[in-house]
Amino acid sequence: MAETHKCTTDTVHYTWHKKHEPILTIDSGDTVVFETREVSDNQFNFYSTTEAISELDWDYVYPLSGPVYINGAEPGDTLAVEILDLKTKHWGWTAVLPGLGLLAEDYPDVYLRTFDLSDGKYIHFSDDIKVPIDPFLGTMGVCPKDGDGTPIMPPGNFGGNLDVRQLTIGTKLYLPVQQAGALFSCGDGHA
Image (cartoon, rainbow, N blue to C red):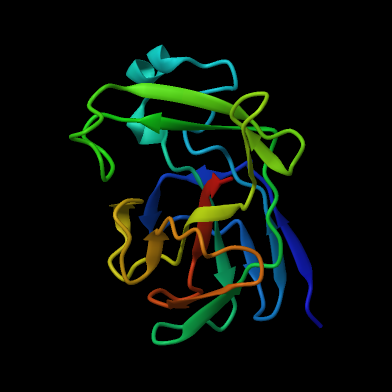
């Protein structure tokens, strides 16, 4: 009979590694409720300003919840991850980081902006501008075949930092298992 498990933010990891100790062991068909940390791992908060970017420690960016070991999952299998629900916490942020992103040459100046998400329905840019929240997890993946401290970015055939906004409630992500137990992890929540 399928069970529901909870994965808290107590333990995270910042790389893909086959030696990361699983925080849960589940059976195929079980449900896992993941709570994830904010992508800077709390180096920013709702009151942070652009100046906080200069203090950002990149070794603690992309904290992932997991890994979760799936009994019976073996290399060559496919893991189907069905996204049943997603909820944001009460605030979020976005930034322009020098040298990163599609428009890096057009926007060379560093910038940080935080947002109120507390009503769970809208990203509040200002009193008269709000955008509906449509959350997704930016990073979902299994441990890569040669996972030995592999950075979270870039993504690969194991998943990773995909940032696919269409991977939202009601969708499935199929990942090729590359390690025994799959060692699935996720994080990098987007509103």
